[in-house]
Image (cartoon, rainbow, N blue to C red):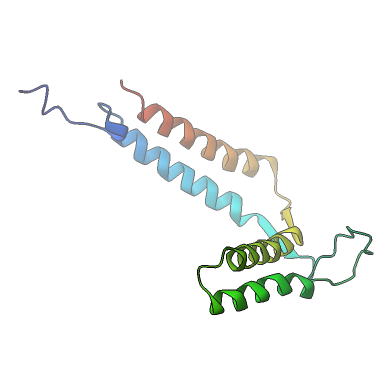
Length: 136
């Protein structure tokens, strides 16, 4: 009876619950410190990447709204129409892609000690969580 009532730890394995929580806290702190050093800027609105014969800086973002608006119109007429769902979802993903492609992500200048501390805390937390999930 004592075997069946044995306490289970993280991931249903015996032991490791404290390691799991300490590792989780280290991951959260390291992740927060890393993300606090990242700067995200926008490159403007529109598809400014110059594909399909366009020139860099030409704003074609309005064209991405057309399939989505047509799809929404079709869905208001008939909510079960597969073409309406396809155009709406496709237009949404085109807009999402256009926003993501125009983001610029930079890591703020920081000294080596802080960078090693941030990445070491994140990696150490991952190691502790992985160890906590193993029986020991």
